[in-house]
Length: 595
Image (cartoon, rainbow, N blue to C red):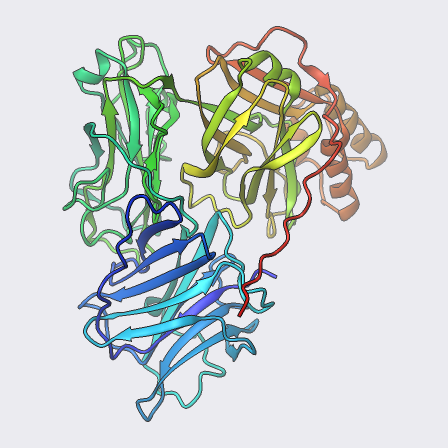
């Protein structure tokens, strides 16, 4: 049972001394930090101890933060305050402090846990901060299980005088006094890094639109030292503008900037790209800027540095490449303020001394096609894309490739993504998995272990989608209102294979539409596009939804086994059977702490 964890504590305190300092050789420790609220008044640091599977949390308040009698911080499946697992600190009307492990009911009201699993509470009287600890998995049914992937941290605060925490309502507070963020708590341990040239790509004194959510795009021309000679990107690191950093966050804007990406403009080397700066979805955005779509760097709130392995780097620039890249910044402005001024951006750490291997990005999952669709009204409809043994067999070198990073991607209805790995029909450990995925928190994640993929291996990427509230089908495609299912897999050495994706075969889809027309009297047209035919199917009954699911999971597939030049490898890639799984991976047993 995945619930949510909140911590509530009283603020007659001031700040913690600091985290314990660990040597770089301590490979069992990882640290990161993030802001909690849009104004940056609340921040959180965490230290992960993998040897004992426990996290030490530290919450800090700025001097601007208001005084309160209780405060709540914790974890949530989707950022909701209902059915939550809570760590509680509060002050009663006699000024006595209380620390409790609690959970909330379906209305967001608190109940005390029978087992108390929020450990080592400490309020520092000299600073505005609180610390506590929590195991990844307490094996308590009322507690949230902390896994690798996206974690929704929720917080709330109040000035209420309390005689008991039972019944305290978290989401009854004003919008200014509760909220949530998305982070990856189980960050990898630190990696040492050499010095490098820094290339900053930032906005400049941008007046952020007074909208809840804004995606802002800015096309820039690379400097001559990059366009004249290929460099390796070796690092993308988060930080603040006043520090040596690779993500420039204007001080005070930490809660505003949700995530950022740098895209390479994949076009002819001599093609001039307009220096567009504006809303990414504006109707007047030049069509030629749409080629700026190949991810080179990404950062998300709370993300640790993305550091390439010492033997590899991602190529950028050179005379054979286009000279333009585009910065995309996602601004989160829930209070719709109109006075935000921002100059945030990303700094790429580059070296002209290219490493042993060129890194590259391979696309796994589903083709960008309207041959795939998600029925309306679904809690968790699955779509799966296949990278089959035949494609890795012809596309990968004999020694295989080493995967070290992964960026999972869907559009608005995606709620979970994972990629499974098979060799000769036997399942190996999962390559990447995020069961609390959100399209609003996309980062390139360093894997905890490097994964070798050999010729003949089979990779299967599955996405779950929630279309509750939608009547029509959501169709596969490029628009933000369409859907995708992709794993951008970062690996070395670079190979010719760039796309290993699938869709249902043309023949199988034709049979499906004929069935719907003949037996269900749907207004299908054999001359219409798959998109038009999917949208003509109504209503999406359970039987009709199950039929579509069976079509996708049992029918032959069409493969995109493409080289980096866009051409497919030789062969007939249509009507191929889905590979059979001989032995799936055994479920991982829960490791419960011994108290």
